Image 1 (cartoon, rainbow, N blue to C red):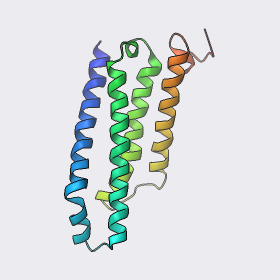
Image 2: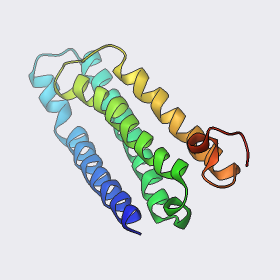
Image 3: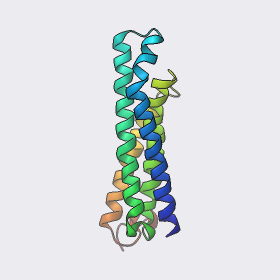
Length: 145
């Protein structure tokens, strides 16, 4: 039960951060970007990037929350692994977009696509864990028990 509580805790913190960033993006980001001298097309592109980052951040935070509340998460390593992958994907995908929008910086060009791929792998991990009995092929290395 301890792992589930921590999963729910991290999901709630992630949702908290997401709402804060979303509020800033909706209320102060446009004027900050315009005041920095960006053209209107650049401002709109950054606002769109922020909205995409916030949506994906919230969707996947809620997925983590759902897994934290799911009793099977205690016994299935694949579900716990999906939580880790969702969190990592949020950091890479949404974090990369937030960096581009708020800091006008992008780390390595592949951060955002790598985050998207990580989120996709998280969904596959969850699906495989739901279909295969036990701890699934992800933790045992076997296709089925």
